[in-house]
Image (cartoon, rainbow, N blue to C red; front, side, top):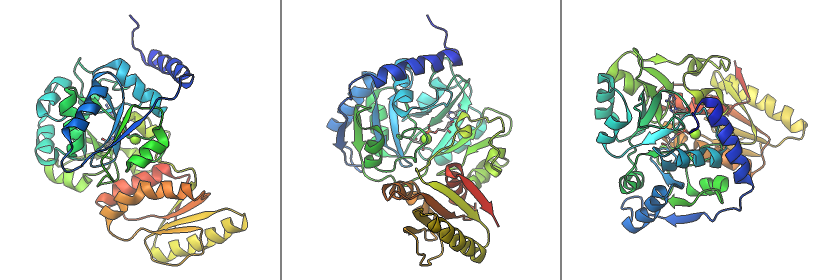
Length: 369
Ligand code: TXA
Ligand code: MG
């Protein structure tokens, strides 16, 4: 038997990647399904694929996930291959029943119970010490595991019917914006996965919040659908990972996903933070500078100004709407072949922290005025 060290996993993945590239494209079946009342016959078809060790993309309340049996190394490996995901970036395991949590982790601290009572099912992922049942490949070789119970009815039914916990990263090619519609999934993964359950547009639009409870003081690893303020209200002190406070890419990261550039459209994003009027001036100056260079320029702004850009997206001031449309907007800029996107920064309060985290991680350059 091969011992699964990180290097081994890497080599296995690379080999599998080469094998995969030489394989014929598979047929990806897209199945429309009712998000309010998922048809059981369709759920059964998808569950059969999961049980046979293959991949199904499905909607959650945050973004679409790319699911496989979390307890089977061979199935999980297919996720890494389909996405082109680095093998040290661990996956989130999705469950539909609290009893599953007990078998996947070693120990459940009080803080976990408190957060589960309040936020599950929902957009909150807990990192805890893993049990022996969880294969190393699922956790990218580390001894903690990320778990969440999604609220979306299709996701819940799929997990229940499959009879196994489902490992699911966002269903995009690694590094691309997360998918909020089945079209986004199929643009990235058509021919690489067995099925997409199309349950329409996802509600929240950015991914779950990830919090590490395996240490003495809880550590926020990724802001998302549940806000930091909501978490602090329930469990008090939370350390915020330094990488979320400033862009220090050289820091040793606790969450392996942190060190990679993410969510990026093909265009280069320039994020501009500061007082409204100064940001507007800067956007105008950069716009004319890039236009002179013959670039196609896109703008995302919270001020409803008419710019002479190639595509301007008015973000509005409702954070829920902003989050819901963020990744879709990134992909629309790509469809218009925009070269540079000038983004006006917003306040990092509430859902704003998660939204700005996605923009920062996608950004090529950050300007603070
Ligand atoms: O909303 C979501 O969370 C979506 C839907 C599909 O559930 N999933 C998602 O998965 O965003 P993914 O793989 O794209 O992001 C998972 C994040 C990564 O940043 C990863 O590094 C982190 O969670 N993560 C997973 N397991 C971890 C662990 N044991 N310790 C620290 N970070 C972990
Ligand atoms: Mg992702």
